[in-house]
Amino acid sequence: MAVDAGIAPQRKTDLHVRLLSALEEAGDADPALLAHHADGAGNAQSVLRHAPQAAKRSSELGAHRETAAQFARALRYANPSDLEVAPRCMKASRTSSPSLTGGKRPSRSCARPSR
Image (spheres, rainbow, N blue to C red):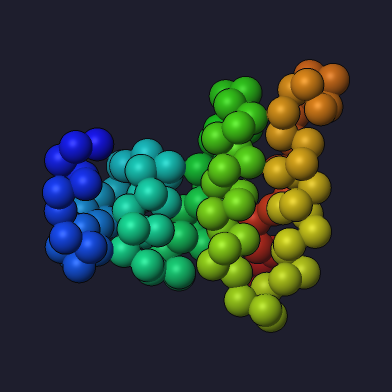
């Protein structure tokens, strides 16, 4: 964290852009890492592609807080025209904690529907 605090904001953005590009080219990166760098780069299209994938993977692993965080990340970048997705994501985010769901997994239906 100390290193991160010493990097100028524009430099951070540039680093996220470069890392996102390199990781996408490699083709086998963790979706959560891709979503993180897409977010840092301010790349809405990439966030909306990778964050739902990261949420799905987190849900499958039982990482409910990470699932909610990835859904929340996707919602921050959703366009108003995509807000039909929001109720599903919000429900999944609210129910991602095992203490709130009685141990049940959250909904996986947040991802954009196929068009």
